[in-house]
Each structure stands twice: as C-alpha cells, then as structure tokens.
Amino acid sequence: MGLHKSLDNRVFAGVCGGIAESLNVDAIWIRLLFVFGGGLLFWVYLALWLALPE
Image (tube, rainbow, N blue to C red; front, side):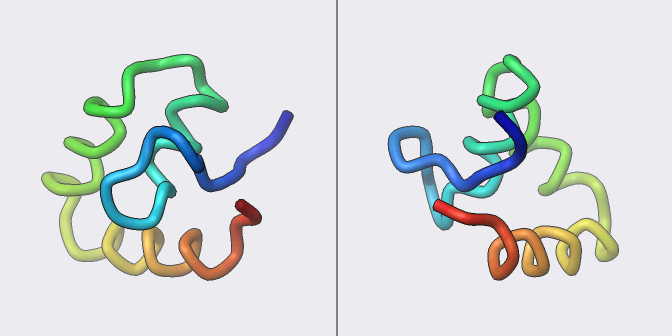
C-alpha cells in the first residue's frame, strides 16, 4: 500500500496517521516519536507532509 497521508486518522496533516496505517500500529506511537524525536524529525515531518499523497 505504501506511505500516504491519512484522511481518517489525522490531527494536523495526516502524516502520522498514514504512517501508522502503513505500519499497522497505533498512531499515538508515531506521534510520540515525532514529538519527542528532536529537531531532525520536525524537518522529516515537514518533508513528508509535502511529499506524501492523500
């Protein structure tokens, strides 16, 4: 299925929800990873927000 932005499981842009759906895990774990992951993951999130399809 590949990475995508979630249309159903979204808080801000759907990036974490889409990654969670692709990995079949709860989205809260992906969100926590991005929140506590540091500055580099902020830039990764922004890049995924722009690059991933809906």
